[in-house]
Length: 178
Length: 178
DNA sequence: ATTCGCATGTAACTAGTTACATGATTTA
DNA sequence: TAAATCATGTAACTAGTTACATGCGAAT
Image (cartoon, rainbow over the protein chains, first blue to last red):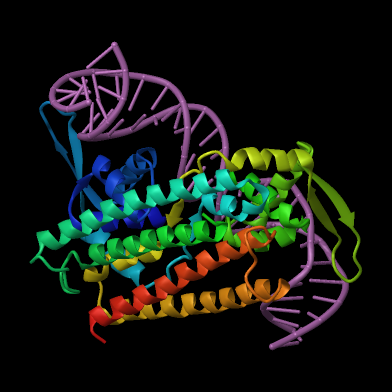
């Protein structure tokens, strides 16, 4: 059981998903490619933490929907109370930002402007996602007893992060003297 | 040449370092264990992007100081202008936050309180680091022409991130109803 | 015509972690 | 006397990425 296994189980608590769907929604919690996800799902099924159902489709390829089992939920509950492993962030952009004195102004400005555009796009998508969660509920954010509470606050956190990134990039650009 | 190679070269632009020293300061830019760093440094030396000098010490084990070469600097300069690979964050805590509805209040509160303590410690250390950089210069933050500018703004960004994490955790705790 | 979305999987590789190995000096 | 700091390295493993493989339908 590694972090990705727990992340997959966690996503399936909310609703049953196919591997393809998981690969997309996992992005927020634990980035992973489908080539890592599919074999792990098979392994978790073998361990009876998940069950699978084949769904035949017309016009589209068939899919396998995974459901979390009671055993899977039990393992998740026990895991929550253990200390989380320290977060890992790896960002090439930071290394490049560190190297500002080595490069020329136009290159650096392009680097930062591209970063702002990237994060503005991310932040807008995030706003829409949050709006969607609010609409699915009563129009306001889900409370702590609601099943979507965890999802909402995590997306909220990501939005905060994205907006802070934009603000920081703009601050650096003003320091560089626009 | 992978991201870690560039990160190592970048650290050595600022000042020559031993592998041991690099393992510590790299934390901010690209987390890596010494077992990954030492062999890579040897490889970069083989490729003539670094040169090494053996320094004999008394009372402490001898060390190898690495210096970046002109070829190393050239490779770095070319790399800066290329689009950075997308940032990767993997954080078990987020999965656990997502699972709030599955767990009980006391467990969740402990989880968030521990997180706050962790990030408060990190933020305090970061404040001291920034203060040190300011003191090394003229007492104010280094300007964009200064060699420590890149280092300063990156630590500043990390501080921002740490403070935002604390604020978010506190917000979640109030939602849970203290 | 070509790219995108849907959908699942494996093979080969690279990146990163944990554990093993050594050993003196300082601090709690 | 136990643990931490300094210091470098290798071996064995796990985690993660890229590339290979297939194929239909819809949109551009």
